[in-house]
Image (cartoon, rainbow, N blue to C red):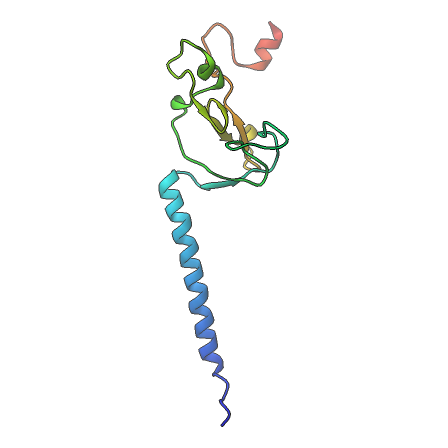
Length: 140
C-alpha cells in the first residue's frame, strides 16, 4: 500500500506554526533580556581588539567576537579608572573585566552605527571657569 502525500494546505499550516513558534521564542528571549538589562539592544558584539590587554588573552578581558550583555545604569554610578586607582577614593580597588573601573558602551558623536566599548578613564565635570564650546576655547 502506498501512502498519499499530505495535502498542500496541511504542510503550509505546519510551516506557519513552526515559524510562529520560532518568532515567539525569539521574542521571548529578547524580551526577557530587555527586562533583565533595561536596554535595547541587550546584546552587543565586540568588533575590535581594543579592549584586549595581552595578545594571549586572559580571563576577564573583552576579546573581538565576544557578546556583551549591556546593562542600563545611572551615569552617576559609573566608577572610572581614575577613581578606582586613587587610594583615598571610596571606590578604590573596584575592577571589572580585568582592570580597574567600569566599561561603558556609547554611540560616538550620537551616531547610531557601531557602538563604542571603552573603559571609563575619568569623569569630566564642567566647573564654570571655562566654556565647553570648542570655538570659545580656541579663541582664548
